[in-house]
Image 1: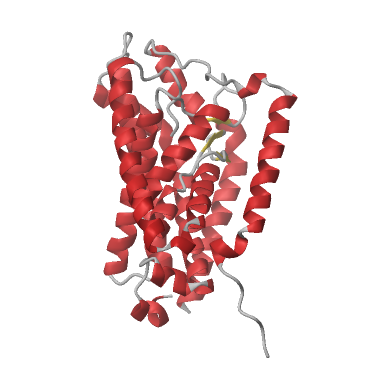
Image 2: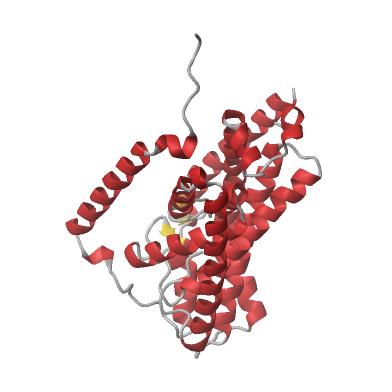
Length: 230
Length: 100
């Protein structure tokens, strides 16, 4: 999902960067509020950033002989809230661009929008919709992991398709680029999205069984639902 | 019963993915990419190159740093590991004492 340095340049790169900075700034203000309300939980920021940094960088081999990355942002968004997770995504992507040749400074904003905004908001939203429908925590976590992962790659493909459709030697229209990109992504990314679905579900269920009080304190899960829904 | 069923589905899914991965990976890898190339380079960067906006080398090219990069990575890992170990209880809480 990392769009490499040099693929988005000029005015679009500036606009994406401004949007990315706004999202990360908004997330940072939520981090301040979180830290004031729950000062003993501040180290969770480090843990969340490490989860996103590691999971979104680790290359997982898939069917096609290529590798791709899971996202990690849906899990962190469910644990800490979507806006805080977006801010942590911004920091992780900056480090990845600086030291791991993944993404880039010019494409940082575009990657924040795909991995952060869409992965966090749709992952977190799907988890809470499933929860309100009465799903157990494992199922709700699976919904968040799957939809968050798919959303990241749909957004990333759309941003890339838009950039390529307006490139000097564009080969296709925007719609055709979308088809080409998604057809190429699917064989590799669908199995990884399924794996992220299961990992998110199992991770949330295990964490909830080990430390349910943290889930109540962070308002991830309602206290009255513990006995029936775990 | 539901838990056993969910576990069976999960184990079957993982087993299916592993079998399919080992069975299909060598035959369908793209010829012009090294085995298990990243999706970013295999798709994003090749399409971008065709479109006339090739990806450029990163500003900090860690692949050209040789052993220095290993040193930085190991030191950073060690420092982060120490910090996580030192403040483990602040992230996950202390375990409750067992028994009396």
